[in-house]
Image (cartoon, rainbow, N blue to C red):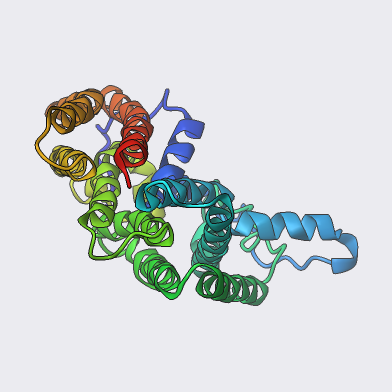
Length: 349
């Protein structure tokens, strides 16, 4: 499907902002959607001499294979959920062990994602110099590295944190790699699947911090991140819609170039986000007390700029409203999560 020639340009959008914004939710990275290079400009599978490549270069390639920025944001959300789930009881040692295990599994997922998409990456300017399409690493080496790191991380979580966080980490890996990765070129439902995989670390952290699967707080934390990712990624999908089209990705903005679907999903995501935040306010501060009502009101207040930006984007789909929605989302999430941590630790047991 080809984007209409009348679609506005994305000139003026910051590539760093778009790339970092996509990493935050770890759903659909826009940096994977760069325009394809001119035919003949990419050479895939060029052999490299191991003698000519220092171990530092190999280590750097392996590090790049893990998608470290995405892993960093996963660790941040995991830590936040662990602090909320623990009340006031989590120790620094337990938190470090949890993050180490989650980091290994997350890095494994990122590496296997690149193994899976190496041929697609080779066709795009932004990704053709990654270790696998550039030929600095072989796909078998990348797959072995990813599998080994994933097994190590799962085993570490099992032995040091517990079987439940380990199981949830494995489920997250499975949602991201064999389900989300191939879906990106097949259906716009990849946004939903990607949002789920990006939000499940909240549940890993919550249970790793001592929370229970029976506690609705953990599931509402997942809901917060799933709902937040919809307006966040719809803004990105609009700004780089032509690049997604060239790369063959299926998004709301490629299936519906008018942007109406993206705008509707943005508003629906905001409604769900506000609902989850209000519910968390009353769960973290039990009872319909003035404090709980006040916390819920503050949650709505810090979410209002993003809500307004989502509404304006839905009403007038252009680069300006999309950029404002993207920026508002990057302010809303840390503000609301900080309030949740404060509430859990101040009123937690």
